[in-house]
Image (cartoon, rainbow, N blue to C red):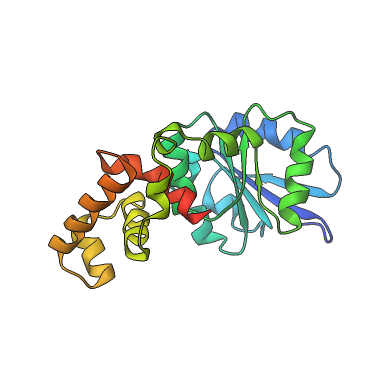
Length: 204
């Protein structure tokens, strides 16, 4: 494999679809300031030290950031449901979220933005996440959550069970249940999955 060129921004494209990866490489490769590599397996990409990793939900299952901890991850959203996308945003440290229908000429702008240390999320995604209708019914409830209740909302969004939350907060499992019941009433929801969008809003 070729040694990465000095001075170029190195981008590892690690998608579930090799064909989609090649197509994206063709788009990004038109900019001479970027050097791209499409990952086919961990061995073939181990010699490539990327600045950024472009991933989709399928590639995330392989935990690419454990192999390249210093690289900034950019998520390609292939049409994920809002709750699933929000859950991914809470679980992983992304520097960008880009839809598959993003115009090709925008990809260079996305990469330059991330390269400068900023965050890029498509405007339509921002609107969808922040304007989720479930939490416009009772906006005051969000402001009334205590710090501990906000922590519990975040843990629930990360998929933790009551027992695990109790261990994290050094409280009893029954106390966790009481807090969750109070949270449900405050924000007017009826199940744990409905707290995921709220967790993202609290984080923002």
